[in-house]
Amino acid sequence: IAGITQAPTSQILAAGRRMTLRCTQDMRHNAMYWYRQDLGLGLRLIHYSNTAGTTGKGEVPDGYSVSRANTDDFPLTLASAVPSQTSVYFCASSAAGATDTQYFGPGTRLTVL
Amino acid sequence: GQNIDQPTEMTATEGAIVQINCTYQTSGFNGLFWYQQHAGEAPTFLSYNVLDGLEEKGRFSSFLSRSKGYSYLLLKELQMKDSASYLCAVQDSNYQLIWGAGTKLIIKP
Image (cartoon, helix red, strand yellow):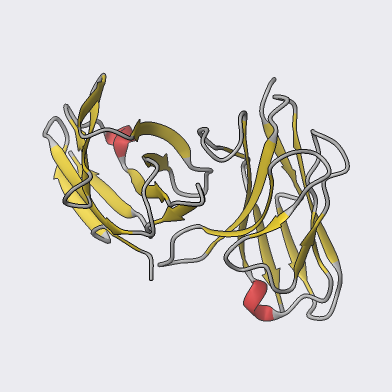
């Protein structure tokens, strides 16, 4: 089934630990995005990638890193998790880049204690 | 700064019509999106407006006035399954999406 998958579905993490959230799409979309969604706030862009091999910073990049080694995968890494990174994380992709409609994965609910 | 405003919550009755408003102030404008998000799920695309006017898609319509920085999403013949949050997002001059906090729509029988 075509779409975007994310793993894990949910995770509880101790502060200071390293964590990688995985995102894979099989739609051959060029652009991919990571957002966080917090209660009462709009989705906020963490990092994006317009095409394989390139990445860029969004609105809230501090404490996060990404890589885009190929078209399908776009992992998000928290080098040393802090409680303020407790959130729901959504990965999204779009076919032709920033001008195109974004399609979202099911999300990862992360709790940092 | 950039800002997207939409009501936090609205309540409507099954079978009725509801209009969800969105006003925006952004650095540039390259389009406006509406997404639907059921509780605990991912946002799903509903509509896209880049020119002024009304776009109709079944029970859902979306309107845009660029001069007023205003859009609305109109939902007709409301069904219980329409209970969800509705997110307004604007593409700014860099083509990044700026998101509103969403409007939670509660449908009552």
